[in-house]
Image 1: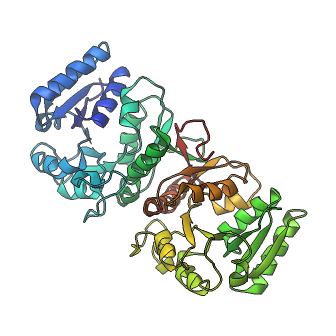
Image 2: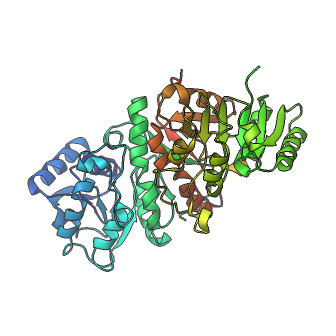
Image 3: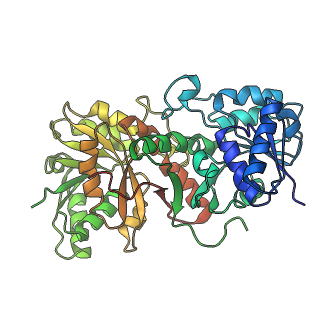
Length: 227
Length: 227
């Protein structure tokens, strides 16, 4: 049986939306939250939405040890503190998929503006903070959280940044378990500086079009790049 | 008869590609170059490719006065110098569509990395440099120049940034004269900080997929936003 996917901050909009989609596909999940009660609540909610869902709710530090590929879906404001609290919980060999976006809303600024992160991007900040041997991958910045949590069909791309293709391929396989999502290799981890800014770009577009827009990369070869 | 479109730096790959597509649609053009001879050469080449093309080749400063909406397609390295040389040539009421991208290749760095521009983006640098009354719009960073210059069908989006929708709408109308391009309102001019980085992102993708990738924004409402 496949390993469960821990989702740190899984009670938030993005984490919850991902969890619902993965649960529908039969994937086992562990919802992590700072608050054990809220984690269990979210797990209960997923079970009530998806019959037979295999999902637990645990405190973040416990959740983080439950699977080899951990998704971090906390708001940027909480990213650094969360990673500090996970120092003992993560261990060498794990992949951490950072989905945070340094929007200025984190400090009461606009969601269409970004903060300058010293390391270059939220993902690179994460890479500096994780224990040795944990590898950070950056992904899932452009998929609308409410759309994920809904029942509509998806048909869009997820840009994946990381320094080794073999690691990105493993993350891509989980992303592509969700019907309608295609994972695109967007280069090394430093490219997260750019890919993270797709979120504020889409927020600017959404405010004009009243949409939940996403992104597709067109004119890629048909052959599956990850194979 | 519609005003011609001046393309400053129209002998370069992007400017030339745009010119060829516009010429095919019957749009009149003025190719600008630092070198009058090269401008004429490019105009001749377009006329040989597109029967009946209405195109002139002129020095940049002369070209810039020939139409109300001027496209600037020079490499970032040449942007500032070009705008200095156009100070007398541009006049109040004109729109300048800046297509430059501050990639680190301008200073022999990587094309997947950007330079920090003091004003925030190449477009905002342009806005600081144009004569009073000239308005800068940012667009056309994600369409592959070789694809434009080719004969293949296009089917992708162009993100347009600028501070007034009425100005962006006029630029959108020109962009959408090219079959297969849709102009998307990506917000105010400051959003060029993000939209300009689509180019290095696509370059990183292209180096992995051997593609000429472009971008589409999905899940926008069908109704035409610019109407």
